[in-house]
Length: 168
Image (cartoon, rainbow, N blue to C red; front, side, top):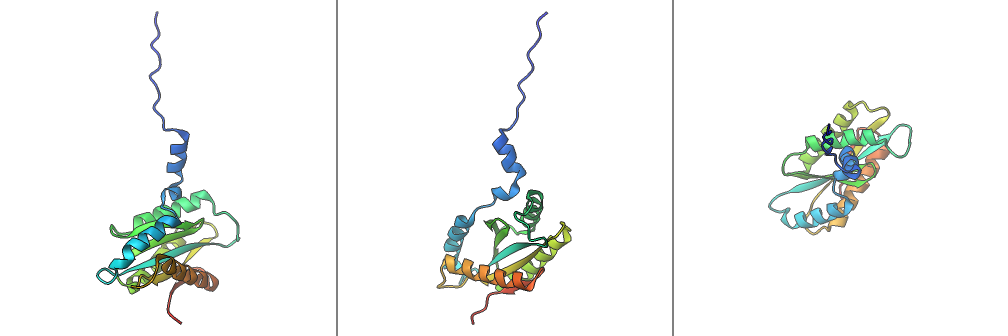
């Protein structure tokens, strides 16, 4: 009696499974953020936009942030952006959003995102955000620097804080 061979099991390669399981790694990196900003800066007169950098805070000051927590935050942010907005990663526990519209709207969106991260109730994890408008005459690196500087100030104030960059 002939035994039919088992049909081949179609499985994704381990690297693909790992990448899909790690949704944060699917986000564009910092270099792509700079490219996106450089492309968008010439159009800000006609279509205003702002950069939001959301940074995670750990109560235990541990490093790194656990992968499942990063995946939950990434999924939350991805579900929260509008079709013309853009989400990327700028560091191990930092997310970048390029949001269309005026800077006041970006501040409101950042506050909602920071609150939504807190609502995930991930043990010891919270967030703060820095916001900077895309202005004519600025470079991509300068916009990112301003938003990151605002995030640093927000982190010093504490969880749930959103700070917008303002000229001294």
